[in-house]
Length: 328
Image 1: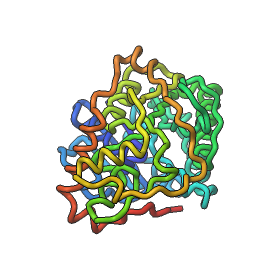
Image 2 (image 1 turned 90 degrees about the vertical axis):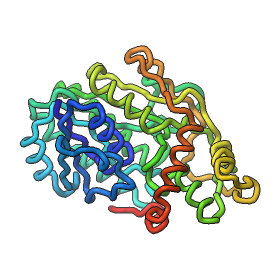
Image 3 (image 1 turned 45 degrees about the horizontal axis):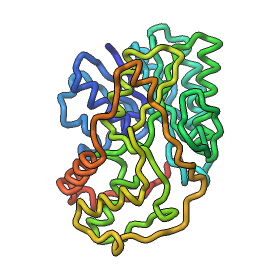
Image 4 (image 1 turned 180 degrees about the vertical axis):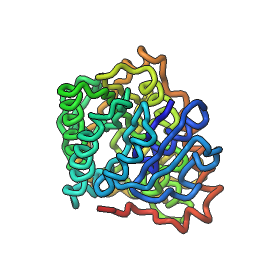
């Protein structure tokens, strides 16, 4: 099967490619607006790459070159991870988030709708589109975004649905909560905690770390996405979430324990970030019923893996940027 993965440099996109290469039987075209990252950040670089090809192409500026590559490759499936994806910075440059996540997507969809080689288009959405809500959230929950990032992704979801309804575009939508693991962007909460502690710095807990997240290991999320891609029903939305939620404070305490650090000495409470949503629970029972999917990697095992990855690559990681760097 031929699969095009847009946003192949992303944490989720690169792990999904790694899973496809591990499974075998897939020819893959990966695209990203940036050059491929170093091996420490891209797990698939450690595998044989004779069935993987990379194209550097920006969705906003290189749409013609991107479409030429897709036409040459003729994938049966397009999986789209490409997006501006940070919540906090989206308040500072909301126009950039809408440019990529909505306008850039519109350009792509308007081209893809006419490509008959595409049997499935799998769009990676986000639970952020549900906004400030509480309780259990199913795939039919109303969309009520509370940040520019979430609004741009909600607009993308509605645009996708319009193309699916009007043109019969073969859309499937996936929403996964709070992925983590080795190779994640260094500014994300879990790798950042490990890096700060390794470097002798203090961890800041926004809102005292009371916010709860359904952390799910990236490989569990990738397995779910593969199931949706191969077995999902066109037109459906699928959630992939963990069995339990953890307060950020609890995760930081676990990390401190793994590294032998005194939690009270190495953390401080700071104000909550704007747009922080309530601690809702992403209901993934549809995926569990349909695919027999369930998360397999415990938080403790995933955190240990992440700690080992950072320790093994510390010399390189400490020289890399640890804060989010915005690219318009």
